[in-house]
Length: 186
Image 1: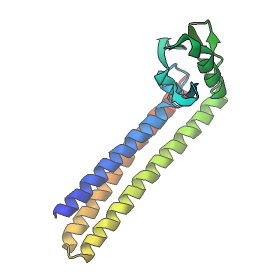
Image 2: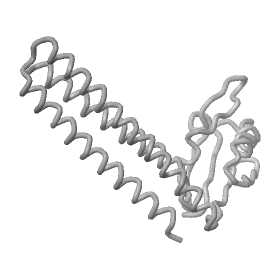
Image 3: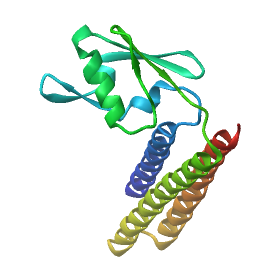
Image 4: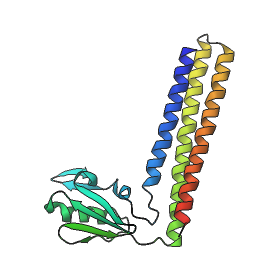
């Protein structure tokens, strides 16, 4: 029974991590509003090494549709500007020497639909992760059955795993629906 509880706790933790990962990926999808998270994936050439933008500059949102990026070193401003352009995010950064300003244009209907597709794809990959966790946990429980665990205990544990899977999938669906609503709101 002790081992079964360990597997159940592990499955629960893994499913929570899958939700967190999906939340993180969804936060990177821009919804027409400025957000510092939009630049999480941008890498800047910092003296020959590829460094995340957040480590070489401060990203702030002074207004809902604008972003300012202030480099810690003034010499990095043009490098950061180039990295943003190269990221192909559809932004046109303006460099005034000290600060890079970015106006976030409103999304077109077509772009919104593309982002909804991307959101659904991220959601689906989250569901796949959850199902994989369920499968792995059930496989481990079946091994316990072969090793002499009670059939009733294993069956109950499998039911708990299924309930966890259903609950986590419902949370994921809610996340996806909220993101879709956010994207389609003009």
